[in-house]
Length: 357
Ligand SMILES: Cc1cc2nc3c(=O)[nH]c(=O)nc-3n(C[C@H](O)[C@H](O)[C@H](O)COP(=O)(O)OP(=O)(O)OC[C@H]3O[C@@H](n4cnc5c(N)ncnc54)[C@H](O)[C@@H]3O)c2cc1C
Ligand code: SF4
Ligand code: SF4
Ligand code: SF4
Image (tube, rainbow, N blue to C red; front, side):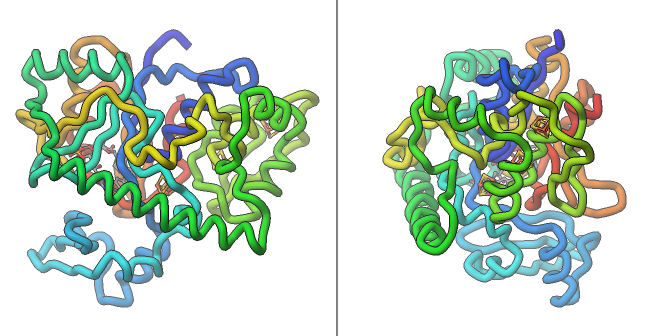
């Protein structure tokens, strides 16, 4: 694993990448070197989204672009028409496990990117780590992106939206916990407690604690770390094909929906809606047209062209299923540029590309 990789992902995928690398001793680690997190209020079930649009007389292949803007879920169609509904009405195709997630701004990334808070055709960027800062500073210096400080108004809006996710989903967690099992990722555990818990768990526990209680986010981290390649994601659920080996707990350590220690998520993270950060910026790519400012793609191009990473993991649409995200690794600038834009759905992605390698 000598090559370095940059990944782009939703907060749950970025959390899984963080756990895989932090608990290398148990998971085998990964060559993920740079983590670019996306803001994320919720994600949608591909099949329910497809079915819902069909009921409205729209086929997914007729959609040119999806956007979430000013409280509306908007599909721009190839024929120039627009279909839009209030975001509150999207619950019919929202993934239910997203309602127990309180991370809006990818708190454990190197750099987080979203649209909220910045003007049109710009992205809001949260620089979190020294590594992230060096990347952003150099990408600005070399002309890949243009940045200015995020406005106070933008910061306030972003903070409000992040708080909205935390409070709405904390209520859902409380309701769920009143009648069902605890939401493990919300337990506050020390590093020792975390390891003690995970060291007695195998796939059977992952099945009971995460998969069968509807908490799996289909990130594919368990599939990636399994040393005997036993885990497969079939019918949108991880399953095993052979018995677990003795003393292996890799999948339980890596999963973003099992316990999270307070060394990964600060104990008071829910009181910091934007997480810990170095700076807040409003950023635009000089040349790439993306979902917002084209900033994620511009950063990836900077990383590749300057040999900071060897490959990047991005998402393209599945050839046979328009808008179904499919992750893959590439070192091609053209691939990165054509993968710009958001696919509002999830799939066993993120880590699948690393596994396929
Ligand atoms: C499911 C989802 C929900 C989001 N919700 C919000 C939100 O509530 N508020 C907000 O401000 N921003 C949200 N975003 C982020 C926003 O849509 C843009 O992705 C972000 O602003 C970056 O825009 P850009 O122009 O800089 O990126 P671009 O240059 O367009 O690049 C986008 C990158 O994201 C990758 N990507 C696209 N879809 C996915 C996916 N499903 N999973 C993983 N990677 C993907 C692409 O491969 C590409 O590299 C969400 C993104 C996703 C995927
Ligand atoms: S669980 Fe859902 S809301 Fe949370 S980060 Fe993942 S896709 Fe987004
Ligand atoms: S062997 Fe079992 S416990 Fe280990 S990663 Fe695979 S499924 Fe999980
Ligand atoms: S069970 Fe596997 S695919 Fe599901 S959230 Fe956990 S690691 Fe990701």
